[in-house]
Image: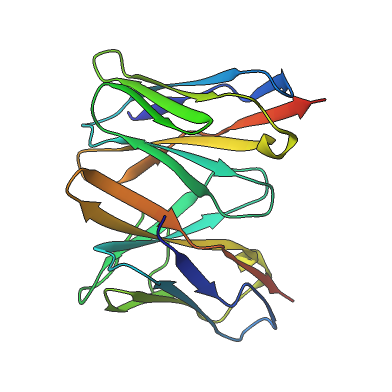
Length: 109
Length: 117
């Protein structure tokens, strides 16, 4: 079967750094997405990785290791507005998005 | 990033009526559009995938006669919930994917909250 695993919930302090991990087992791989979703709103695109390595976009970075079936989203200089759910999703061999359940990130002052 | 719009953002309808939701990619042409449904505190559930000019592909368990999808152009897809029932009340989100030279990008509309009374 296809499976995406990410922690259910994480807590971090404002101004700190947090890493949200995602491991996957899918039938084929055509890239991995990270999305941010605030309660009651639709997901917002953060990143797309298809090659191994680190992609940096401002305070957010995303890393991929295809051989390990592993990715992480790194958030630096955390702000209160970063409190949200972070969704990991893999594009499988049929170009369908397989979704993780999401990680709820709680930022404390 | 690219923008996907949805209309209406929220709608209340009576049981037995039909509701149409529009999804538009505003500044790009989407090779594929998707319709999702999301219940509170749960992940997105894919309902169907549609390519412009062809019939939508529905996920198992999704009634194609109840959730009519029309993908009229590379920038517009519509979802019609026919004969709505209270259990159809949910958050419906469309998404549009574009293939670029460096890979794929997939953007979501703001969602439509449907309440059936």
